Length: 349
Image 1 (spheres, rainbow, N blue to C red):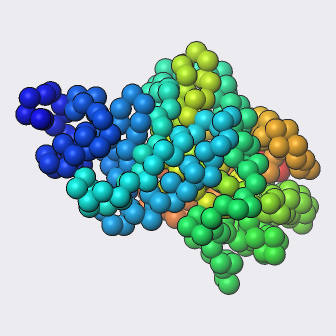
Image 2: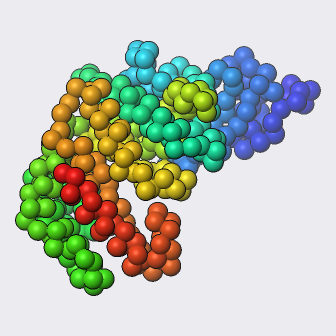
Image 3: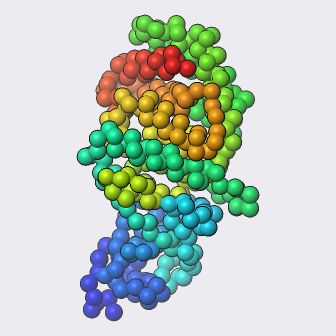
């Protein structure tokens, strides 16, 4: 059959010739209707105008794909969610050595397609749309959903380090200890590079301010999170509207603090060209998000404080870099950049 028809030969990187024939027969498809996407780390994708077929790249991807299937299944009946719907789990050894899943295909283009030509107002519009969409899955009632494969927060660290600080600061029982730890780190580097406003950042007043807003965040109820939102996972209607039509790739789905769905560190480098506006972006998105979920926090600076402290620690992990990609500066000036930013955030609290 295939020999008489045109088709994308790269599909043979997913299925061999005989498997591809069986695949087309099983789903009543013509070979030329099928396209291929090899971008995923853990899965290979075939797709048509209406459906997406996801295969594990290798045995290590099986659990990740099943996690994604469970997420789609949990959201299948929620029509307002711009998320693919699970159509079928398929076990057919004539087609694939591994089980695979079929989901509906969402309309739209990845936000990444437009990033190079966007203005500030376009980015703001997208982030505000995202802040309205995220609550749709954060508000899902988890009762009755099998979350055994979903990613959960790791165990509380015994000793706080640069590597595990984020886990500690989001543990309500360790917030104060985590702040004291990072104030010590700030003091060391601030003294080393003669940062002028160091006393403000390591003061008891700052400790008190940071403790109030970070404890509030740490005590937020855990929700269903995507945990890997970035420019390739967000589908939009057009550059003009920035209406979100799809959020895809749910293999990292977890039950965690809602803050994990606002993480610019998951994004590529392009978003960091707007880093001078991150404080404004985060304040605006957090305000919208809290309103959508009918939640209140004492300060809108908590999101910016959490991620700025996290990014500061990321810089410290790579002192050998001549230029840090998230700042465009060398190590010393990257440290000063974040100390200055933390000082500004603290003044707003």
